Structure formats: C-alpha cells, structure tokens
Image (cartoon, rainbow, N blue to C red; front, side):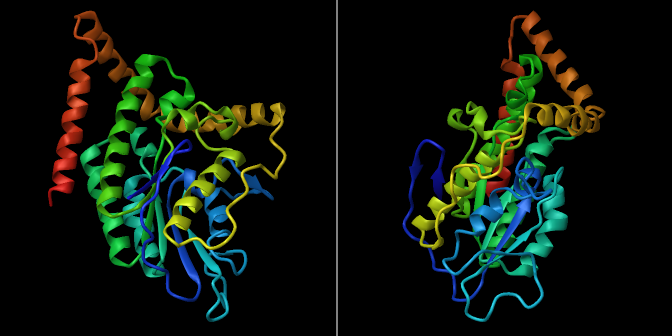
Length: 313
C-alpha cells in the first residue's frame, strides 16, 4: 500500500504500467468525489477531474463516455465519475460497481462511508463486507485502486462532545476498515483524517464537510504524487492554488441558510434521534463513573469482529 498524508508520505516501488491507449479512470463514492465544494461554471468539479488532467501527458481528460472517444493509441484520460452526493456503501456496491466494472478501468477510486456513519442503521460489519466486495471486483477487473480515509463529521461540524464522540467512533471504525482493505488490495491510499487536514480551514468549503477548491486541489495533488511514484501519472501535477474566486461571506451565509439547512433537515429525522440516544447513554455512563469505557469497548468489539470476518476469509 502506498500512503500519504498532507504532511508526510511513504512511497512504494513502482507498480505495473498501464497499457498503451486511453487511460480509463472510474470514480466511485459520494459527494466528496462528486466534487461538492468546488463549483466551476455552475457545476461541481472536484479533485477527480483535476487528477485526471495530470494522469496523461497527451492532453486534458475526456469526461464520461463521449461519443467517438480519444483517438486510437492516444494517452488521454477518459474519466467516468459515478459518485453521487448522499451515496452509502450500499449504493456504491449495488449501483456504481456494475457500471465501473463494465467500464474496465485502469484506475478506480473508492471513497465512501461518511454517509453510513450518519445513519441510525450504521453497521461496520456490513460496510466492511460491501467495501471488500467493491475493491475485490475492481481489482479483479485489473484496476489500480485509490482510497482515502476521512475526518469524522462531528469534529468538522464542531458538535458538542456528547454528540461528536459517537460519530468519531463510527468514522474511526470506517477508517480502520479502509486501511485494512487498502493494504489487502495494495491501494494508493491518502490520509485525510490527520490534523494537518482537519485544522486547516482554508481547505474546507462553507459547509465544513466538503473541501473547497483549495482542498480538492490538495487531494488531487496528493493522489498524483503517489501515482507518479508508481509510474502511473505522467502529466503535470495539479496546481495547489485556487483559480476560482473564493465565495464571499454573503454567498457562504446564503449557502448555509438554504442548501446547508436542507442538508441538516434531511438527516435530522434519521440521525439526530440516534445521536441523542447515544449521547444519553454516554452521559449515563459518566454519571455512574464508568465514563466512555463501555461504549468504547462495544465499538472496538464490533470493529474487531468486522475485521476478523472480512480479512479472515
């Protein structure tokens, strides 16, 4: 596994070369990979097109399956972005994976799990099995895999500790599964959960949950560096500095009052009651002197069972 954070990296030996011809890059996941937070010409762009532009030295990427496609023998990148805002691991497994495999990608990124942590039905064992199946099928199709771990949303939103801790446990479990599976499938893995990422507000958009343009560029540059170390990126690395003007304070406040409020309302009917129950359980443990040890132990046991079941096969 090749690993990089924003502060340090470990480089692996170069991997297998991509065959001659167009480089096919499939992107699976949720709003993080759809590009939310980086709007260009009225549409989301994000890190994936920025990375695709630097994979080949023969020109910019062709987005999607454009008619005709690149000329035979060209080293252009063909990008198929299947990521959709709100996607769960189930959506990636059942809806995005079949289309990605049919695309026969040389590279495939899979970043998913945050939305799973925001559901009362969160099940780390089920998520691990789904993610294992997705990565296994893409690897079997010949794709080099790209993965990332992400910060927990409670920390990014600045929730009070009793509400933030349950989300932190869940995201920790998701990241542990991603790390284990990334190692199994020799994925190019990007660490985005460390302090250098979470504490730099310049990387984040107004919603505090998605990268802004600077953040998406940092993600693209991180993946590009790792792929170049494997001999899989031949174009110029993405620029780090934003090109689009940053949103004004008025635009940010408008987003939070409209789209941001809608985001909270759509999830509150499912997430908030569950968080309140989990927070109440923590407060009861604090009251009887046991602190967070019982809930921590249950989360650790569930994660251990998920890893044993998934990695032991």
